[in-house]
Length: 462
Ligand code: HEM
Image 1 (cartoon, rainbow, N blue to C red):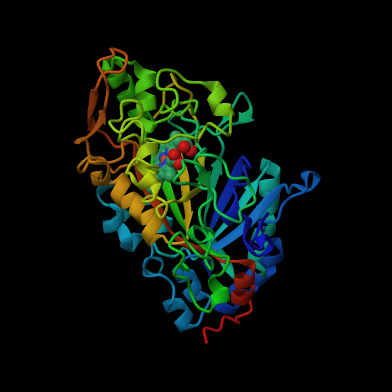
Image 2 (image 1 turned 120 degrees about the vertical axis):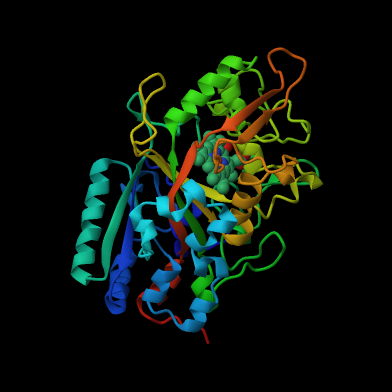
């Protein structure tokens, strides 16, 4: 049972809709009064977290979030603006040194829309069909024209990769994605083993609501830092939006080259990189071969720990999933990681090229990565800085995450192993740039109450 008011929370903050298509409309808000009128007119269309009856599943959804600059444009009172967490006020670009968004990931390489600091709002339309997407976007475009409250800077399309004419959960490197997402109290779905936090007796239970929604106690029993007045923050959350370009040709070339040399073969090496076989089987559970039975079983596909594999002989210590969600790998029964969890949303963008066909790094292709959390500083920024870009917590010195790290050709990835010829230790050196940042920002996803307050200019911090 839900103890949170799902009708006041944007659906996107609570669940992935699992619709195959999305368009992220990146907007500049225009005159404050007109911008507020635009938000007010849009309000009835904003999708909440309410449950859909089977036959009433909408064809498309609408969600809305603002950058700090957007809230300034909407003329929130100064005291409210200044009560937002500092990292949100500064925005993602200013946090580049912390995130290691430098060199080829620096703002000078971002899409122009992100370089110009004009994005005030993110309006996400998720849709079940291409027609439903167009229909909804046309209606929103009309609203923008009628109210003169917003201007479209860029429409970022994203779409699930279709295999055999069916939407899949694959990403461009060929891995099945979207298993691991934290359970938290109040969210509608049942607690799935492996998705929440570990209890001392080895069970999994939902994390505190305040790790993902403002206005509720978090894992420390405290209310997360939130703007004033209370109603402005409550039931809202923060979102990190990052457009991550994937160099698919480089990835495939590197995997082919190293896979030839590795005793376990190419596919096993691919599995070691991520900690899951490309079909999604966790290698901690099935280190020698993919197991479709595990993938299909919700009670098993994220139900594993690393405590029995401290040396990484099943799942390397530096594998992507082990770095970004170390579970119990750092001891204390997982207690150290419960405040570093992020909820992932997002979809691939760009055309998928099947393995074996010519593919170019230069083409537009990657993931629109979105991470939701109550504290960008404590959750996303920590994970990105300490676990993706730096390896000390895993005793990996300054080794970066193989997939998502900002590589310059000098990095390495260690596959721990045994004397078994199918599982030998192996060193992957000279890590090239697999993923590059093309821009993004930090957003606030308000509750429905907060959206109404913003739209009517009634945010009162006193
Ligand atoms: C283009 C870049 C990336 C690719 C291709 C990628 C791919 C994947 C894949 C294939 C999985 C396994 C499926 C699953 O467990 O759901 C995964 C899991 C995950 N990734 Fe990434 N990822 C990328 C970037 C990132 C970044 C930048 C972060 C964090 C800052 C991140 C955080 C996570 C988390 C938290 C999980 C779930 C781990 C778990 O709960 O066991 N990923 N990713």
